Amino acid sequence: PTPTSTPTQVIADLERDFPAWPLTSYGPDSQDTLVPGDVSPEELRANAYAAVLAGGSSLEAIVASEHDIVARQHEAFRVFLAQAREAQSAEGAGAGGAPADGGQGGGY
Image 1 (cartoon, rainbow, N blue to C red):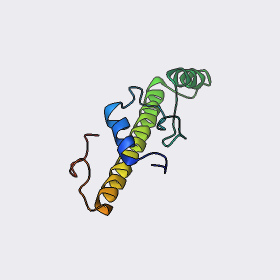
Image 2 (cartoon, rainbow, N blue to C red; image 1 turned 90 degrees about the vertical axis):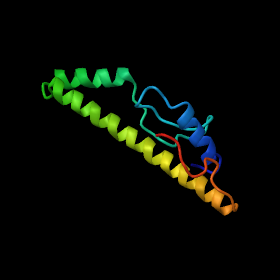
Image 3 (cartoon, rainbow, N blue to C red; image 1 turned 60 degrees about the horizontal axis):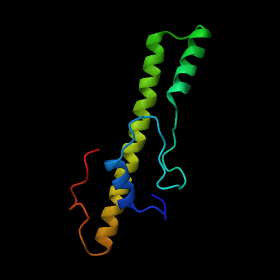
C-alpha cells in the first residue's frame, strides 16, 4: 500500500470487488498501479495466434503458458493483500487496539 491508500481501503477493494478478469492490474481510486500485470483477452489471443503462426507452439503449450501467467498474477494479488493485512495489523497494534477484522483476515 502507498501512503495515499490505506490498508483498510486496499483490503476492502480486493475482498469486496475483486476483479473478475484474473489478468488485471490494481490501483485504488485513480492512484498509481500497485499490482501491475494488465493483459486483455485480445492480447492473449493475439499472442497465441502469433505463436502458432511462428510454428513453435502447440495448443497445449499455449494453454500451459497462459495458466502460468494467471497463476503468477493470482500470487501477486495474494501477496499484495497479505501485505495490506499485515500493515493493517501493525496500524491496529500501533494504536493499541486490535486489527479491524479481529485478526481473522479475509478469505483470499
